[in-house]
Length: 218
Image (tube, rainbow, N blue to C red):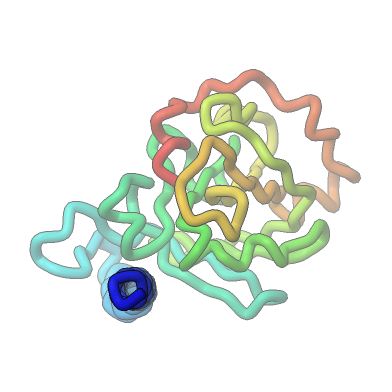
């Protein structure tokens, strides 16, 4: 009986420590994302002032290229060059091989579902999204829809017609581990959308020319 109680006590202790460890890890990730954005805001402000890329810290292998804002959700984040692991620990990343936001084609920005892009689950068609590039130009987009795709079968084409934007994160939002699914918010530049009328159906998207490896890290 005593042995059983001891075992139960050890098990409970292990679970408690495991939960505390998981909580600490989660808090560390959240704190890193928050502190990183403060430093990125400073670097982005310098970029806007000087017109030259400014690294947020001396050893950084990336730099701010834009700010993405979702006014309906009250969210804003500095976007870094490249959607790779280290960069995305600090903020959203602009996927290499896709155009700058506001340019012809589909710009793609990816971020983690539990930090900077957690708000994507609350975005709905018609919501505004604003992206301010490093040259200070602000581009206004309107959300046209959302979809769930596999990372290796996204159907996203950076060379599509028009001026479009895709915000990408992992899915489901409450999952504890990374899976094959990605949640995509699609938007089109507002003035172009108003001039052309309703956006084409999602089924009209062309086969995926985006590197699947780029989608894997989100």
